[in-house]
Length: 137
Image (tube, rainbow, N blue to C red; front, side, top):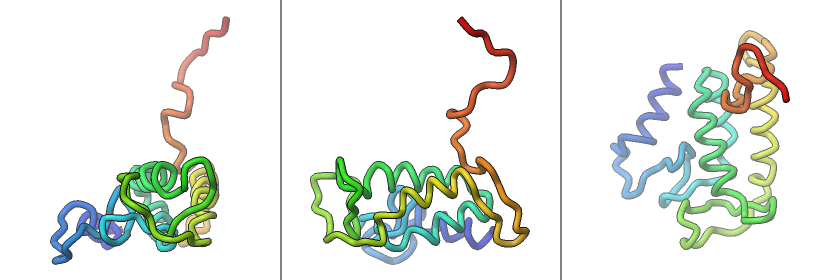
């Protein structure tokens, strides 16, 4: 957990990487300030495996849903910039299954160490009803 946290913080916030551009944008690794779709699976899986749900959701919604997919389609470039006016790279097949895979992990996730099956481990709490009595009508 500590190593995952250290890597995430180092690349996301500090930019002490000695690189000209930030190696992470919107919680996702990439290059030239772009988010890469073909390397994202390990990051998301590691975040969930180490109970970093908020970071997983930032990565999934901020990067994958909002910026990786070509508007109106399920096609993905190899890397995309958060600014839609900046050109993307060519199409890559590995990114196409990113969103469905992340949705599956958000709803059903098997812990790799304990073999525990989590139901709804990463569901955004805003999606769930508030506890207490519910009024109808």
